[in-house]
Length: 221
Image 1 (cartoon, rainbow, N blue to C red):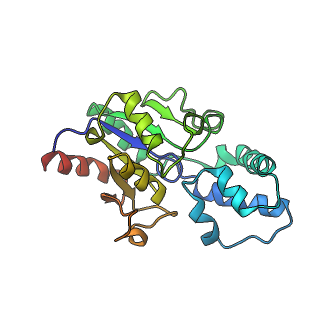
Image 2: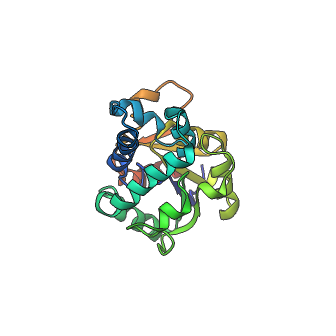
Image 3: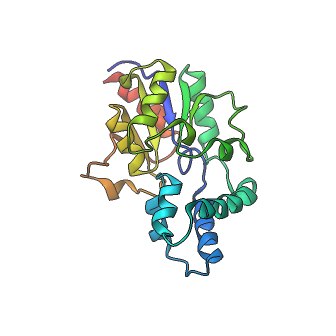
Protein backbone atom coordinates (compact mmCIF):
# COMPACT_ATOMS: atom_id res chain seq x y z
CA UNK A 1 0.00 0.00 0.00
CA UNK A 2 3.02 2.27 0.27
CA UNK A 3 5.06 3.84 3.01
CA UNK A 4 3.52 5.79 5.87
CA UNK A 5 5.42 9.08 6.07
CA UNK A 6 3.70 10.90 8.92
CA UNK A 7 1.47 10.35 11.94
CA UNK A 8 -1.06 12.94 13.13
CA UNK A 9 -1.81 12.79 16.86
CA UNK A 10 -4.77 14.18 18.72
CA UNK A 11 -3.67 15.76 22.00
CA UNK A 12 -6.22 15.09 24.77
CA UNK A 13 -6.78 11.44 25.59
CA UNK A 14 -4.37 10.29 22.88
CA UNK A 15 -0.94 11.77 23.48
CA UNK A 16 -1.62 13.18 26.91
CA UNK A 17 -3.71 11.71 29.69
CA UNK A 18 -5.90 14.73 30.35
CA UNK A 19 -9.05 12.72 31.06
CA UNK A 20 -9.35 13.35 34.79
CA UNK A 21 -8.33 16.99 34.44
CA UNK A 22 -11.06 17.55 31.85
CA UNK A 23 -13.67 15.93 34.08
CA UNK A 24 -12.47 17.98 37.06
CA UNK A 25 -12.58 21.18 34.98
CA UNK A 26 -16.17 20.52 33.97
CA UNK A 27 -17.11 19.77 37.58
CA UNK A 28 -15.48 23.03 38.63
CA UNK A 29 -17.77 24.91 36.24
CA UNK A 30 -20.81 23.13 37.69
CA UNK A 31 -19.61 23.95 41.22
CA UNK A 32 -18.99 27.60 40.34
CA UNK A 33 -22.59 28.04 39.21
CA UNK A 34 -24.04 26.03 42.10
CA UNK A 35 -25.24 23.24 39.85
CA UNK A 36 -25.30 19.53 40.61
CA UNK A 37 -22.41 17.62 39.09
CA UNK A 38 -23.58 15.14 36.45
CA UNK A 39 -22.18 11.63 36.05
CA UNK A 40 -19.03 11.46 33.96
CA UNK A 41 -20.99 9.74 31.18
CA UNK A 42 -22.75 13.05 30.66
CA UNK A 43 -19.44 14.83 30.08
CA UNK A 44 -17.35 12.33 28.10
CA UNK A 45 -19.41 12.84 24.89
CA UNK A 46 -17.88 16.34 24.76
CA UNK A 47 -14.35 14.93 24.52
CA UNK A 48 -12.88 15.82 21.15
CA UNK A 49 -15.44 18.55 20.46
CA UNK A 50 -14.72 22.27 20.38
CA UNK A 51 -14.86 23.39 24.00
CA UNK A 52 -16.76 26.65 23.55
CA UNK A 53 -19.56 24.93 21.66
CA UNK A 54 -19.86 22.25 24.34
CA UNK A 55 -19.95 24.78 27.18
CA UNK A 56 -22.58 26.82 25.34
CA UNK A 57 -24.70 23.69 24.98
CA UNK A 58 -24.33 22.55 28.59
CA UNK A 59 -24.61 26.00 30.21
CA UNK A 60 -27.07 27.90 27.99
CA UNK A 61 -27.94 30.36 30.78
CA UNK A 62 -24.36 31.58 31.15
CA UNK A 63 -22.10 33.60 28.90
CA UNK A 64 -19.77 31.27 27.06
CA UNK A 65 -16.79 33.59 27.48
CA UNK A 66 -17.26 33.43 31.23
CA UNK A 67 -17.65 29.65 31.32
CA UNK A 68 -14.51 29.33 29.21
CA UNK A 69 -12.65 31.56 31.67
CA UNK A 70 -13.84 29.48 34.64
CA UNK A 71 -12.93 26.22 32.92
CA UNK A 72 -9.52 27.29 31.64
CA UNK A 73 -8.44 29.04 34.84
CA UNK A 74 -9.02 25.83 36.78
CA UNK A 75 -7.22 23.76 34.19
CA UNK A 76 -4.22 26.10 34.11
CA UNK A 77 -3.81 25.71 37.87
CA UNK A 78 -3.85 21.91 37.81
CA UNK A 79 -2.37 20.97 34.44
CA UNK A 80 1.21 20.58 35.64
CA UNK A 81 0.32 18.20 38.47
CA UNK A 82 -2.28 16.10 36.69
CA UNK A 83 -1.29 15.76 33.03
CA UNK A 84 1.33 13.44 31.58
CA UNK A 85 2.06 11.45 28.46
CA UNK A 86 0.35 8.09 28.40
CA UNK A 87 2.50 5.15 29.43
CA UNK A 88 4.55 3.98 26.47
CA UNK A 89 4.02 7.20 24.49
CA UNK A 90 7.53 8.65 24.92
CA UNK A 91 9.04 5.41 23.64
CA UNK A 92 6.60 5.30 20.72
CA UNK A 93 7.36 8.88 19.67
CA UNK A 94 11.11 8.22 19.82
CA UNK A 95 10.74 5.02 17.79
CA UNK A 96 8.63 6.72 15.13
CA UNK A 97 11.12 9.53 14.84
CA UNK A 98 13.99 7.03 14.58
CA UNK A 99 12.17 5.39 11.67
CA UNK A 100 12.11 8.73 9.91
CA UNK A 101 8.37 9.40 10.28
CA UNK A 102 7.18 12.97 10.58
CA UNK A 103 4.96 13.77 13.55
CA UNK A 104 2.23 16.34 13.99
CA UNK A 105 -0.38 17.33 16.56
CA UNK A 106 -3.94 18.04 15.38
CA UNK A 107 -6.11 19.35 18.21
CA UNK A 108 -8.99 21.68 18.95
CA UNK A 109 -7.09 23.06 21.95
CA UNK A 110 -6.08 26.68 21.69
CA UNK A 111 -2.38 27.42 21.40
CA UNK A 112 -2.04 28.97 24.87
CA UNK A 113 -3.17 25.79 26.62
CA UNK A 114 -0.61 23.81 24.64
CA UNK A 115 2.44 25.93 25.40
CA UNK A 116 1.65 27.53 28.74
CA UNK A 117 1.71 24.28 30.64
CA UNK A 118 4.02 21.56 31.90
CA UNK A 119 4.58 19.99 28.48
CA UNK A 120 5.70 22.74 26.13
CA UNK A 121 5.03 21.76 22.52
CA UNK A 122 6.69 24.89 21.16
CA UNK A 123 10.04 23.44 22.13
CA UNK A 124 9.29 19.77 21.51
CA UNK A 125 11.51 18.73 18.59
CA UNK A 126 9.53 15.57 17.87
CA UNK A 127 6.52 17.41 16.45
CA UNK A 128 7.08 19.15 13.15
CA UNK A 129 3.77 20.99 13.06
CA UNK A 130 0.87 21.71 15.39
CA UNK A 131 -2.64 22.47 14.16
CA UNK A 132 -4.47 24.11 17.07
CA UNK A 133 -7.86 25.66 17.60
CA UNK A 134 -6.75 29.04 16.25
CA UNK A 135 -5.79 27.50 12.91
CA UNK A 136 -9.24 26.24 12.04
CA UNK A 137 -12.69 27.63 11.35
CA UNK A 138 -14.40 24.23 11.27
CA UNK A 139 -13.40 21.86 14.11
CA UNK A 140 -13.46 18.08 14.02
CA UNK A 141 -15.30 16.13 12.68
CA UNK A 142 -14.82 18.51 9.77
CA UNK A 143 -11.85 17.41 7.66
CA UNK A 144 -10.34 20.90 7.86
CA UNK A 145 -7.90 20.26 10.76
CA UNK A 146 -6.54 17.17 9.06
CA UNK A 147 -6.37 18.84 5.66
CA UNK A 148 -4.41 21.76 7.12
CA UNK A 149 -1.90 19.29 8.54
CA UNK A 150 -1.55 17.55 5.17
CA UNK A 151 -1.00 20.87 3.43
CA UNK A 152 1.66 21.97 5.89
CA UNK A 153 3.43 18.63 5.66
CA UNK A 154 3.14 18.54 1.89
CA UNK A 155 1.81 14.98 1.97
CA UNK A 156 -1.12 13.12 0.48
CA UNK A 157 -3.91 11.54 2.49
CA UNK A 158 -2.63 8.03 1.73
CA UNK A 159 0.75 8.83 3.27
CA UNK A 160 -0.42 9.52 6.83
CA UNK A 161 -2.29 7.99 9.74
CA UNK A 162 -4.39 9.95 12.21
CA UNK A 163 -4.48 8.74 15.82
CA UNK A 164 -7.28 9.81 18.15
CA UNK A 165 -9.50 8.87 21.05
CA UNK A 166 -12.91 10.08 19.89
CA UNK A 167 -15.47 9.65 17.15
CA UNK A 168 -14.69 13.24 16.12
CA UNK A 169 -11.11 12.19 15.37
CA UNK A 170 -12.08 9.16 13.30
CA UNK A 171 -14.66 11.16 11.35
CA UNK A 172 -12.23 14.02 10.76
CA UNK A 173 -9.76 11.54 9.30
CA UNK A 174 -12.37 9.77 7.21
CA UNK A 175 -13.73 13.03 5.86
CA UNK A 176 -10.20 13.98 4.80
CA UNK A 177 -9.54 10.60 3.18
CA UNK A 178 -6.99 9.67 5.84
CA UNK A 179 -6.84 6.30 7.58
CA UNK A 180 -7.85 6.54 11.24
CA UNK A 181 -6.56 4.76 14.32
CA UNK A 182 -8.59 4.75 17.53
CA UNK A 183 -6.77 4.16 20.81
CA UNK A 184 -8.19 1.31 22.84
CA UNK A 185 -7.56 3.17 26.09
CA UNK A 186 -10.05 5.89 25.13
CA UNK A 187 -12.40 7.11 27.85
CA UNK A 188 -14.36 9.16 25.34
CA UNK A 189 -14.96 6.47 22.74
CA UNK A 190 -14.38 2.80 23.59
CA UNK A 191 -13.85 0.99 20.26
CA UNK A 192 -16.84 -1.30 20.83
CA UNK A 193 -19.13 1.73 21.10
CA UNK A 194 -18.55 2.78 17.47
CA UNK A 195 -18.28 -0.62 15.83
CA UNK A 196 -20.54 -0.74 12.79
CA UNK A 197 -21.18 3.04 12.84
CA UNK A 198 -19.93 5.82 10.59
CA UNK A 199 -17.39 6.62 13.32
CA UNK A 200 -15.78 3.18 13.26
CA UNK A 201 -12.02 3.59 12.78
CA UNK A 202 -9.91 1.81 10.21
CA UNK A 203 -7.72 0.41 12.97
CA UNK A 204 -7.61 0.09 16.76
CA UNK A 205 -4.52 -0.11 18.95
CA UNK A 206 -4.69 -1.13 22.60
CA UNK A 207 -1.36 0.40 23.59
CA UNK A 208 0.88 3.08 22.06
CA UNK A 209 3.53 0.48 21.23
CA UNK A 210 1.02 -1.37 19.01
CA UNK A 211 1.27 1.42 16.44
CA UNK A 212 4.70 0.25 15.26
CA UNK A 213 3.43 -3.21 14.32
CA UNK A 214 0.34 -1.68 12.73
CA UNK A 215 2.45 0.52 10.46
CA UNK A 216 4.52 -2.51 9.45
CA UNK A 217 1.34 -4.39 8.61
CA UNK A 218 -0.14 -1.53 6.60
CA UNK A 219 3.04 -1.09 4.57
CA UNK A 220 3.16 -4.81 3.85
CA UNK A 221 -0.37 -4.92 2.44
